[in-house]
Length: 96
Image (cartoon, rainbow, N blue to C red; front, side, top):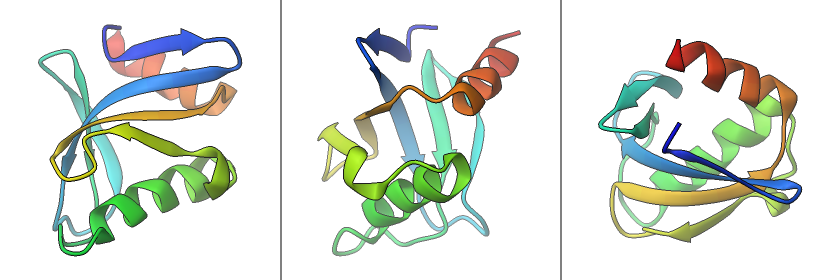
């Protein structure tokens, strides 16, 4: 899982964001990168906000604990968030 790095109590994910989707969802792994579709346009940070909201709502993580480390202005991003068992289960299922 090249897109996932455990760093202490946190996870760092390498993500490709696909904006303008019908709904926000994890859509798979592409070229060793986690692909996430977001239901927002890539205008004025809306896609970034939706990505953070997706992790917050879906995995019950506080928005203040989710950080975009790099790639704020592009589709390829690195995101840091607390370890989460539900998220880890989904990611392991995707790699099988």
